[in-house]
Image (cartoon, rainbow, N blue to C red; front, top):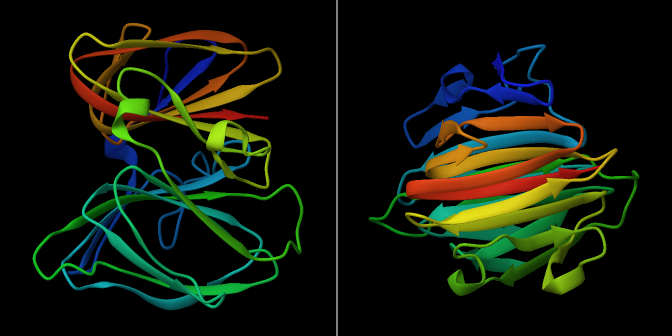
Length: 238
């Protein structure tokens, strides 16, 4: 990590945890599993960002969660989701999916393709209260709504067609092409996390690459651009 200005802390992609087990190639932005770094225990309510590549026909067998808001953001391929609520769905690029584990939920995630690899971000956010009723929600956001602009895809109040999350978080995504610029103002007493999902982007003049994350503490005007192409996630956190 490197200090850029008083409000920035860059989490370098090369300092992430790494787990590889044949069918799974996973990079951990924050401490997860056997990877432990006291400086990477999450940021505000954001607890996990795992960058997972899953081989064709492979995946996570049924396992349980409690008291966590779990989002799956697919970058390439598709993931087949099944859970103890009876949900059966396929999540593709452009979809926003959230599972509120609450009092307890079991689910599995598999790559249903026999040939195509799956690339996704698994995001965990601590809920604003424990013991919630488990729930599942999924919506599709067309590329046109994200190209060259920030699109809200998850929010506590579910406004603007976003999926609802049980936490004071607004999650935006954007797909940027050469020459695109998006701006965002982090308000007083708010925080932000910028995750570079794919490509190369520049934040206020600082070049960032896929896997880099930036925690932003305090009011700040953000200018995000690219001259190559990038896909980004921006979390506005209470």
